Length: 322
Image 1 (spheres, one colour):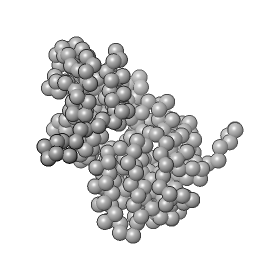
Image 2 (image 1 turned 120 degrees about the vertical axis):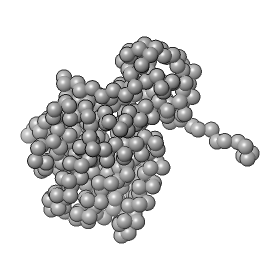
Image 3 (image 1 turned 45 degrees about the vertical axis):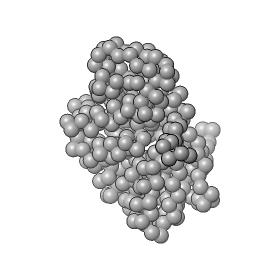
Image 4 (image 1 turned 60 degrees about the vertical axis):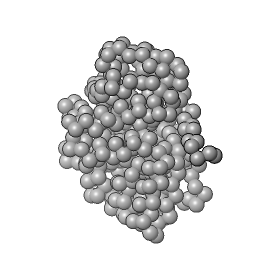
């Protein structure tokens, strides 16, 4: 390579497909998983520390209070597999309590994954840390080193809420297939609560969530030869009561025309790109969702106000009847 040459950035084919097909819809939409390039991952970590963003504080408190209970129910020596590990900031609570044989963090953001895994390996020098870069919504092969070990899946942050019911059930079934019969899953789920609290959590006064949302357009411009005028779009969080979910949208503040990989798109003032859902669950909803995905709830812990829940479930042998 000549000194002045710059390696060409190769876009993920799935990213290209999702963006182009999503922008072609009447209600334009792009899956939330594409938020998480390096910048998006860092912005999300900043969101979790905001005063309005209650889920991280409550879930971290629950983990601190109840990981001992989790350990008694799961036993020691399991391989902990974390789906969408991000910075792995919640993982130490669980790892200290359950004395795992290995830790397998899975994340789509490779640079972020490697950095956080290195930090965790330093903090737990006797623990085998085996990072896997990939999309955890798809069936992934786990490292050979955990073959034959009992497994504990870890899926915090109410990330399951980003998916519509059908996709959430598919994901839970994929997790069951990846982890195997007899495995367990510790999952965080956000509860339904007053819309004012919910909207504030996704529309903070410092504007960090707005930057997180618009960073998706920055990524499209960088990786897909996009010509999207980022300053023409505003962040909006909406409560959709019919679906019990917060929706994030990028709303066109003026009429805009732009191209992505040479394809032309037009958006009129007020039209939006739907970028994220965050579904909220009542207790029965959460348990039904887990059972639909092949998981049997065996324990549940909530804060005093019942704003957030940690649920431990088991992948029991399949039966044709209850």
